[in-house]
Length: 306
Image (cartoon, rainbow, N blue to C red; front, side):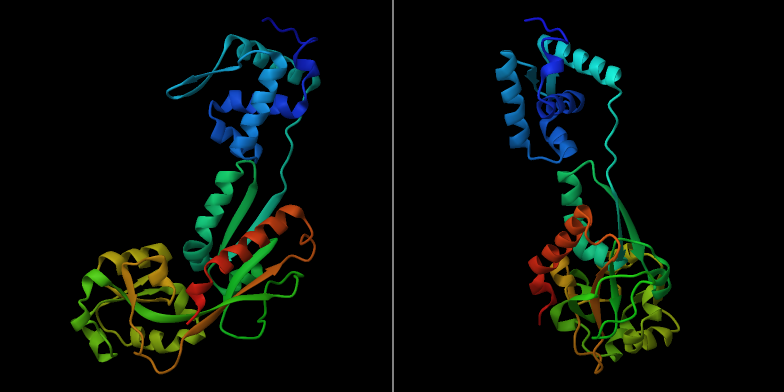
């Protein structure tokens, strides 16, 4: 079958034409579906409908992916020609700015954000990490997730936001890797910490509720490491026999780590808060991120209980 722009490409349903064009460009149904932000089953239905309409096969399946058939190559050429003739613009996606506390991004939210990007390759997302109260005050974003010591809504971002929502209460304990501490020899008092190297994330030095832990670290004359990287601190606890302060959910996040409760009389707690930019809170893409955050915390509710 031979195609001409007048009889074929120009008269195609725009959705079907776009499904074919992106599939031909990607050479992979899954990647094409991500780019179009639809399910792969829906994409395949579009392509099957197009092939039925044209009464031909547009793709040849190969071991390493998809290849266009002779008819598929002809259709692709026509669609490219039409696109040049009409100068079809690229649809700009709105930029979503998400500011989030670094530990929350790494431990809780990161996996679901990756899943979002796997489903939607066309999204525009600017992720900003917060590592201090100063960065919280300086940030400009659509959605903000931060940590604070107080139960009541604390001072949040400097721009106008919706009423802050408390998502979780976190309690913090010293943690150690299980493989570096047998149950019988596991430290259970502050004196026992003398035999272990302590590791501290520098950001935590400014947290008032961590004063009991920070005092122990500050008194150390040896056997202490200060780090500016949260991920490196976790790696040192996992692999270097160090003890560091982490949220109590960490044993859920990493089964190789175990909390050491009971060392401090004063509890060390923080709250997770979320607020949405008052000017952009009604936008569909902003609501998508807000819904993702709520779902993430609801699915991990057991992490924050007890």
